[in-house]
Image (cartoon, rainbow, N blue to C red; front, top):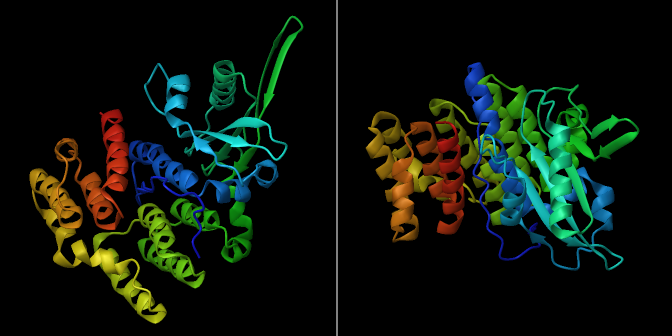
Length: 354
């Protein structure tokens, strides 16, 4: 079952992780990195994303006509001038069933804390997009934090009889934990995305996390997803539900058993390219330069010649954990272009954190 109905789209859910027992500073940093996998998942599974979180809007879109992501245009409009941070926004041009054109801006804020500026930012983004294109703009937000009381859905201001009220639809991922059985039965790929995210938030015990990770991976095979869909969703699960090295090895072995049962070696067939050669262990024990070289060598083994700008960017990454993730991405990516997109995310996050 091939879920992606849009050909030619770049796919790269390079998955940000949530560590067990992180410090407060580390937790905030990692939560800020959650936007990359969500942003990629939204783009790859846009139709399914809308059906899962905003079914009324989904039903109003004419899916027989093409839609267009306008991320570069959005960056020009809504860049945060103060901090330079890029929020995980998506701007999509769609067509309605009545033949009218509207631009739909999807705003995904990955955060685990209350943000009083969020509604105002949503309003600013909305009116800037409208001002730029003079076309009706619908703003929506998916809240992936674990604060059940944080549910901002409007921005209001008034003085001397002049009043403004801006309301926008929201979806709270935390709410879906109430009906886990429905998630488990839902064939929509975003049900898998939500389950993985919830377990990343809830489960800190590494052994329990491994068990849940395997259960979610088994669901991918049970649902009969196509090869590329299994890999895409695996990347999301793998990056959010990261495991300690010893348990990760156990996970791979148990995953092989599942794939042998299903006779579908989708993931371990590419995993063993690097993992069975001990590359991850080499990064852990080796120097920073050796870690960078291992990522580059993995790319050469997979794709042949590696562009010089890619090598330079990899050599600019100076955090071993990021290099370990990039190595896994080099092993799992279905194309060099896919890896390059995630490398760019990693570079931006690396610069922002310094």
